[in-house]
Length: 469
Image (cartoon, rainbow, N blue to C red; front, side, top):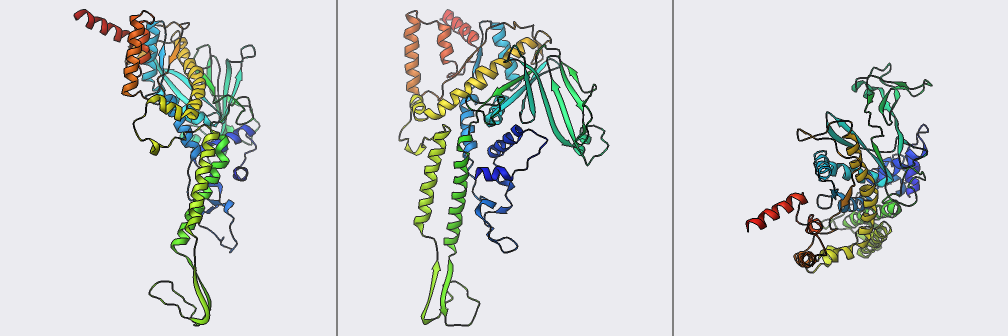
């Protein structure tokens, strides 16, 4: 069924096959995959009286299982309680980066990037405007990256090219000869410039012309974009520019769930208003009204019945859907835990064991979006500080060491229970007292649990309190 739906989505031959595959996966994620079908699920006959097959009807029940798994995994990586702390041996770098990334709302940007990138890839653009750092998520459907020949992990340029209507260009301040026509829009980032090109008609063979008025020289010496492949494994599009999709393995099963639930709902409606069947009626009146107040009189050999669907059929569908859901979640490492089975408060470690599949998925996402992307963005900020004076909360920062060591400290997967916190405190007290662990390392290990934003300030506060005591 997925291939049938994909074949109905219009294909623009001016775009590469990769763009179409990403578009289809994006429709699955957004829940708009069925919008190409012409009929509602309750439409059984076309205006011409022909029967409408189910494959041409939009499901009336849409349980977007794929997006649920994506959101669950993203929440375990970049939600407020799971966002990693940026650490560095250089206190100035650590404090400055923490303040910059917090002011730039990088947490929100990474959540958006992780959601959009679940189709296979995503890009994040960094800009420095009037000393402030900004980050923007870019979908890769219309982006074409090019890497350095001798440094395949370093971008040489990224080109964005897509179609836009003349009316939209007019709204953006462009002058176009035909507002009703279609135009190409293009811009390119390289190590020194953000090049903008003047839009040109799609049917034209003219060479793209640089728009010098809108082009900007950033002069950073590197492309201010991080290209993120979603997950290791077979590419979602068959292209090396993309990684594996988070939800692709469950798409067919998710579609089957939607249609089964829609059909079950249709059956329940029919059971509420069953079809009346009369055999050899004894009356010539063609207008028959069903109801307790309208008795039906039939001949001696006649019969009247209500055709309805039994309750066992609906129960069988629900059981089938539950099985499908289990299989789909297992195939993409979704959360299969049932909250109704929790008879008592559960420790964080127990929750990790129950949701091991989802933990594995989130752990892989930490590699791509955390160790791969988040640290790269932080490194970009350090390098940008060598070219522009960075401003945080109105104060100008001095240039930061671009070679400073950076690392991420990730919090627990699930909040620790009171018993977990007590055991952690006892273990840390024993280790620090025996000289096997420093006080700073002990504080780092519990910083996320007790919302300690600055380890250095906390150590200084403890020292003052101990001195006063």
